[in-house]
Length: 124
Image 1 (tube, rainbow, N blue to C red):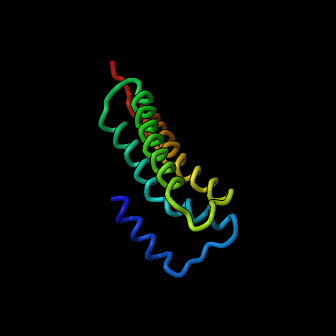
Image 2 (cartoon, rainbow, N blue to C red; image 1 turned 60 degrees about the vertical axis):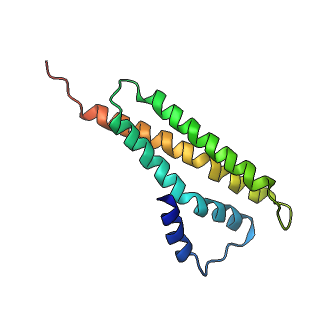
């Protein structure tokens, strides 16, 4: 589903030009935005479905899986041939795009766990 959101964002970026170092970082971040949104959605869904007293363990595992998957994406991106060597801003953008889904997953899941724990009232 993130692919379809990526296509929609691609259509919105048809005539958009990213220039300079900040533009390169923003390009990498805009490409990773759908994955960030779905990582947060996956974390909220995980906390909602798993009824446990310590959901942070499960969120940590999900965030670790996102970090592993994005780490593999970084490796594939950097080892494929580039027309010119990557600049420092490319490395920064790629690193941020790889780390943000795991952070979004953990932050959104923690927020949802605290939100749902606050709504739960124990009646005795």
